[in-house]
Length: 163
Image (cartoon, rainbow, N blue to C red; front, side, top):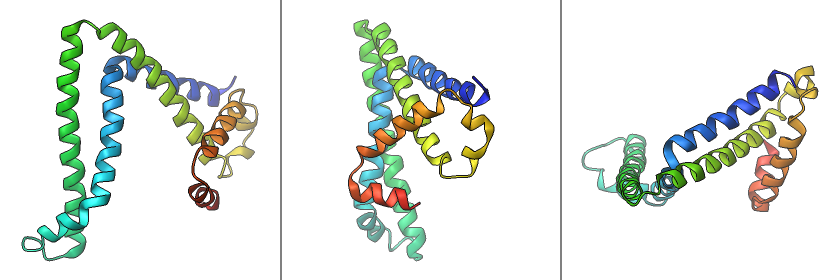
């Protein structure tokens, strides 16, 4: 094992520790809230930008403010929901299970992040470095990255491969 392997292990361990600290409910709600925030902002930013036309004259600024405002609003609602559910879990006494499942979720997230990073770094000159080729874990995470890419719809996969 070399420094590349230790970085991979460190990323996964750090992600698992964050999962333990936050718990499964907060982790899943956080991910879901970000997805919802970006989707809602993408779908409705033009309508909100039109509502801001009397306050902001520059269309680019108006669109940016509308998009960011929607993202922040959904993130705020998600944070409130997460706080309520976390309090409920603490009250019921499921904190230990929530933290344990959070660790598993965090570890899985770390694996996905590393696999995505390995896929992206493989598109650069880095694989010619001896540390990359001597890494014990790189080939496993490259395989995971390929598998994750196979789950993506073909149109998006083609666009990713063109990068």
